[in-house]
Amino acid sequence: MYLGLGSNLGDRFAYLQAAARALAADRRFTLLRTSSVYASRAVGENAGGEFLNSAVAGLWEGTPDELLEMCQAIERDQGRVRPYPKAPRTLDIDILWWEGLELNTPHLRVPHEHLRERAFALVPLLEIAAHLHDPRTGAPLSASLTTNLLEQGIETVDRSDLLAEPARV
Image (cartoon, rainbow, N blue to C red):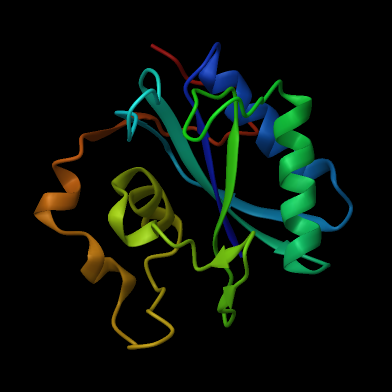
């Protein structure tokens, strides 16, 4: 299972690290790998400043709804508020992909409904899971990474593991 992490308020890198540490600390979650950290422009009106984004691979011993509840609790613990859609945020944790699972409920869609349209989610995910294929068509997920998508503006800012101390320049 793969999660996307994002932050565009405060010490963005520290929020991503706090999320990775909180995930790793939960007995139901096994953190397997983290991607590099990427900088990207915010998407949508009133979305705020530049985001830092990363992806994590993990194993979850529970239901998708329980994972969503845990992710939202971590967001709240890190000061996330939701005054309006796409508001700037200290932390955002999205369930991007769950191998073998397609889910479409009013509160959760897996794979993430906008994954193929957002470089800030797709690039970190493909860094740690280049093998993924579309569950409906069988096409490699990497085929979604088009020139137009990369023109959204995304760049690597840190290649260290989120659980390690940052190698900032």
